[in-house]
Image (cartoon, rainbow, N blue to C red):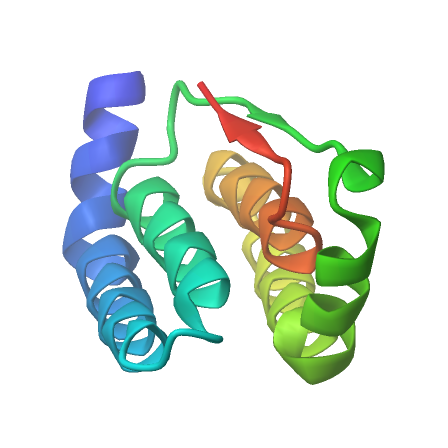
Length: 118
């Protein structure tokens, strides 16, 4: 299921989301101040490509100030978007695995600093 899910996710969602996060990461890395935010965009891009079979271990306490800044600037909107997409996916039985991946991405997009993706 992981292989089929990753292939379908990559074709319909993953490639476009990963490209967007990758471009945002490059833009953030242009400035010295934005490099930590750019690294988190690259982390999100990696998970957005193939999320099936990966786990996210969030650790808010390791970088609380950076996570609060991220949440205020754009984390809440990213998480809300993934949450809405996950709920829409979960309406159908076949979409539940994809909805679960959206919830995983929502958690990472809310507090990416200190999070580990395995």
